[in-house]
Length: 110
Image (cartoon, rainbow, N blue to C red; front, side, top):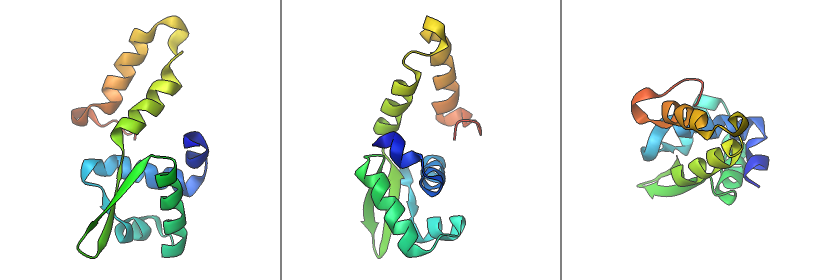
């Protein structure tokens, strides 16, 4: 279900944007504006990402804020990289550290 939810172009764009937003997340309106996506369409895609367990929602005043569930994202990355690098997982650990450390946000990872 997780991979299927990210297989759709708009959902992947939303997820990537929320990854870049970090733990504070972003308001639905800001996401819709940035991705030039109508509110009903965005709402549908956000629900699909929530259903897959990739994002969470909370309310701040009148705004719905969405953020990535980082533990779920790490599970997905771990699953995808489990058998990587021809049996040399230490190579993948370097990639994960470079990609996922807050101080080194690589554009190729987000």
